Image 1 (cartoon, one colour):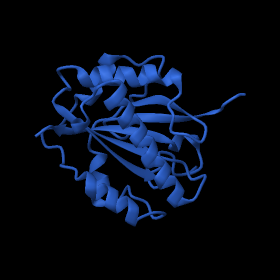
Image 2 (image 1 turned 60 degrees about the horizontal axis):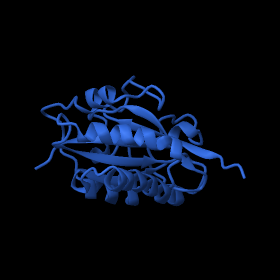
Image 3 (image 1 turned 90 degrees about the vertical axis):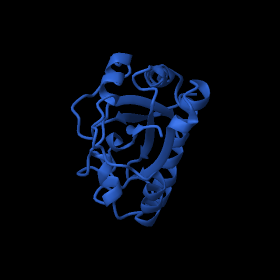
Image 4 (image 1 turned 120 degrees about the vertical axis):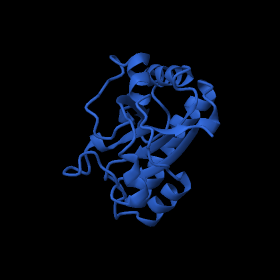
Length: 189
């Protein structure tokens, strides 16, 4: 049986950063350098408010909402994560990439920071289904990092954005829009 996977991009840090790395090219230094670029005046992000706004704006977009807009001011890196078709199961070949991310999060330079995992989908299903799927994808990365790779769950938060914040708005059904972002939220308190 052949299983076709969903390719999901994991974005870390500055939303429009040109720093794109694929699983074969990604290394801990690249992850640490990108995630470590934290501005002293970075905006505070309320994760519960992000969830509330996403649920209240299904089909309307979230990128321009004040709390979601704050995320674009924080650091990012794009890497490739593959999931099994119609599943939140991470493809075995992508566990190496998730492991590299976990290694970087365990590094002393990043150990004191907390991270938001934002799931995104393309517009191939209903907006409500896509929001639920994107939350599950974010939760899957969160769970892998916290259980398999022992990143403290107190440092990880997840939220789904569905199809509401496409990276390629001109092609909402494009697979490029299916991604997961890992965003540095600043120091643990």
